[in-house]
Length: 106
Image (cartoon, rainbow, N blue to C red; front, side, top):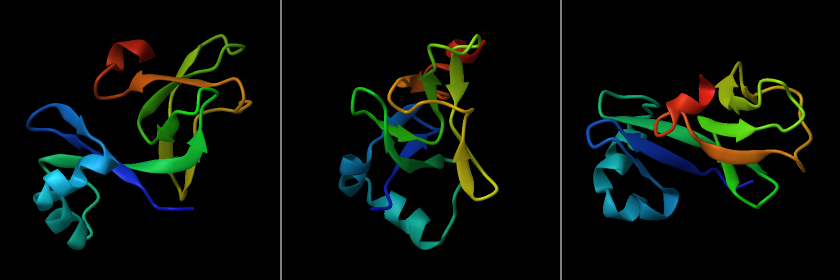
C-alpha cells in the first residue's frame, strides 16, 4: 500500500490534498522533521480503503453507516490501527471530515 496523506491547514482552514503537496514545499519541511501535528498543520493518513463510491477514506473523515443507529462516525487512528465501528465496507460512504463538517457528528 502506498503511504498517502493530506493536510489540514489550521491557519487557512482548508484541506490540502496529496496531489497538491508540490504547491506547498513547507509541508515537506514539516514531514522531514517527522512531526505528525504542528501548530499550523495536521496530517491525516490514508486508511488504504475506499468507500462504496470509490472515495479514499482518510483519518478524520466522517463516514455514514446506514444500518447503524448513530449513522455518522469519525475515522480515527489509535494504537496503531484505524477504527470507526464494525461495518461492511461496501455500504459505508464518506460524508465529510472532522475539520470541515464537524456538525455531522452532533
